Image 1: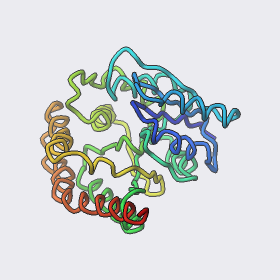
Image 2 (image 1 turned 180 degrees about the vertical axis):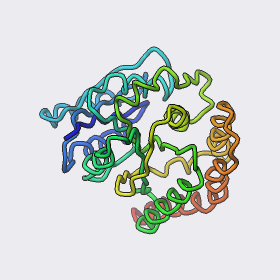
Image 3 (image 1 turned 135 degrees about the vertical axis):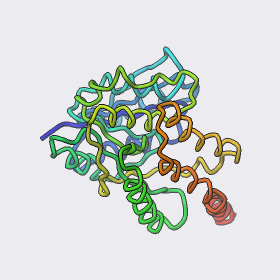
Image 4 (image 1 turned 90 degrees about the horizontal axis):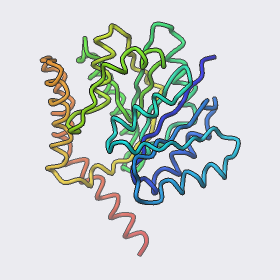
Length: 270
């Protein structure tokens, strides 16, 4: 069976990295490596990771330091370069992956022609989780059909064959100004290399809805990265802009639901 390394970029994630690592350790098929790449954190992220290394001495939790530059792209690249598994999984430091995530991800790579895979997410701190899981999977499947020649990768839940990473690594954009989505940039280069990306519905990861705490202007800037990424690469397919437009449209509803759950929790504590 192929081996899988999990790469987790982290910057000031002391509150979320612990549960993330718990989920990575509690897998039906163990990860070959669990690599946390710390990017100049100023909080207790490193201490929390070291605590989990002590709690699970037999788990392959590796802590790397990426201090040459601030940003998700160089931090991700450092983790991908260090990974030695046949497949490199990529999640966020607030992700909580399902117990069979490694198992299901490796299944996607049983087909030797598959270079990369991505899957759905469930927002574990948002209301109506079961509905949200179904809705996210349905939406991403629709997006997948719309994407046609430019299949996407979702950075919170994706994996790439190590051989594919080595093939496209030097072509990916450094994005020093931090204007693009690094996962979409990677996907563009994987597609351009003629490599196959698949959507795996059973490759499920949980993520936080904490972005709903961002201001409307920050949200608009975040979704503007879709356009900036595709425009940078000269990709003019207007159907690829649909996801950003859709998420912007439902943002007020999602934000209301997120705040409603927080208020409910506060009232329950009174």
